[in-house]
Image 1 (cartoon, rainbow, N blue to C red):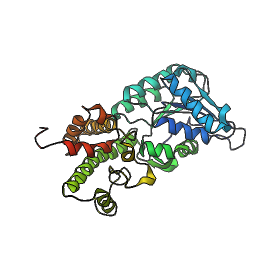
Image 2: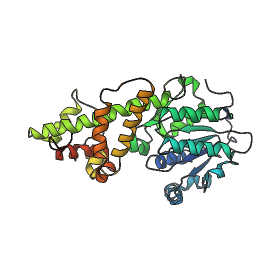
Image 3: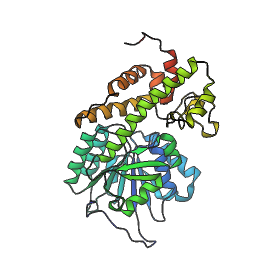
Image 4: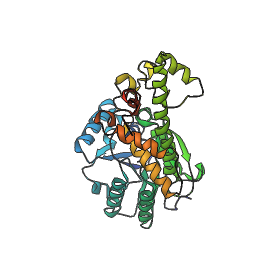
Length: 335
């Protein structure tokens, strides 16, 4: 159940909602941009990133393309600047659990006034840390909801992300929070009553992604060894039992879907990079142990992502690049 402190806003034009966003990386910059573009009259958006030039570049980019809400967007130079802004929601999109813990605890410590924001953490972090942060801030009267996303950079860019929340039903998600999430995505999935269920769904999903990505790379290399036309093979897989996100939406073969501007068409630049896939795979296997669950493909999957991430050119490119890498690996090269 949502806590009683969550605010219900008036439906009159005079109401004001203050949104905050922390973390303007590859995902966060697009999510914050959609909030800005869809601000209601009188609403404000405050953004912060540890790298000042990211905040400045974000401001110049979004206000240059859409000056309509320019006056409602403010960049902050420190987390403490949020303290007196009467924030309603603050979204965090940062790399690791230690960053979430540091950011949220700083925001709670420096908070002023009676109006306490609801923290929406869309980062992908370990479940124990998220539970610890939740319990800590909850005791101070704040709400902290794990709401990780699926859809990658492309989904963030298109505002088609799926949010996974630790809430039991759609009815338990406040209309104000639903409004915020719908600005950034198209799907909202309540995953359970206990805090951490949103992350549990996210990590389970990304474990599947990491393993199927390896299988797709191996399958396409197998087809290549048989002399098959890989563009034709990709189209076959897309309507056959081997279909998956990794084989279609993130197809590793250049030129199969030119209309979609896939990472394979730009030498696997950007996208969901391999090192982040490895990070989520590790989080999934560690969280599985926390939950006394053995993952049959966890260790073997981690081994291959560990090997790939030893090379910077693989670690920092879209995970689809593993197709090309597996083509270079020879039997006996790895033990």
